Amino acid sequence: MNHVGKALMIGGLGIASLLNLSPSVAKTALPYPGTLPFAVSKYVKTDGRCAHLPKAPCTQITVAYPQFHPSSTPTSTAIDAINNHIQQLLLQKAANDRPPQDIESAMSQFIRDYHAAVKEFPRQGVWADEKQVEVKTNQPHLLSLQFSHYFYTGGAHPNSSRTYWNFNPKTGTLIQLSDVLVKGYAPKLNAIAEQHFRAVKALSPSTSLNKAGFWFENDKFQVNDNFLIAPEGLIFFFNTYEIGPYVVGPTEIKIPYTELEELIKDQTFLPTP
Image (cartoon, rainbow, N blue to C red; front, side):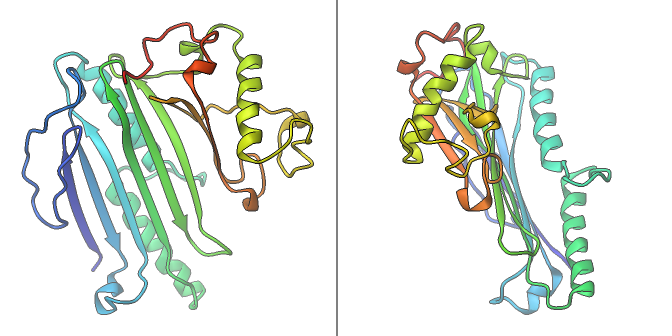
């Protein structure tokens, strides 16, 4: 029998409970008035044979994510939109087949896929799948989340990714760069971001990006849409394989708001220090 555990974390700061225990609901002080209350659910499912091999590596899938609850300001429609967005992306599959209907189904399918692989390839190593959605900023005008995914299902190496989502908590809609920056921001933003990118990668201003091993179209740097509206500035994250081969790895660049003053048209969505 597969082992399934669940933990719960309450509030903006969170209080964790142990797996397999019924969590108690406790009110937690939130850092800002109007902050969205939430509970973090964590589910763990392992290969049933692990119970007989407690010290051996084990195939396991873990999913942890926040579930937001209505407060006095945001409407239930906005909260539902945010929760649905989280659920849909957690259930999204790379394959073309129909995604599972819920988290439990997805976790069970992962274990079944592993068992099928072991039958076909008896020397198959253990698999791992870890999905976590974290609350990075929770303020009345900005809700920023980070989705981290680590997985290994055989092959030369594991893979991981990081995705950012920035929500307007009053409407439940995603905040785009065009909501924060002035019209026609792209050329100047890319120029500023490229300076940070080259600094992170230790590249001189004259070095060809593509000759250095990156995959930018026409050898021209540009930011992606995977960004976090953070207290210290805009953070852009390029996942492995996005702009270069596996050996290049992921890349994060941070641009302070002081460098973006001419581009910011609306500070409504910027975090409060």
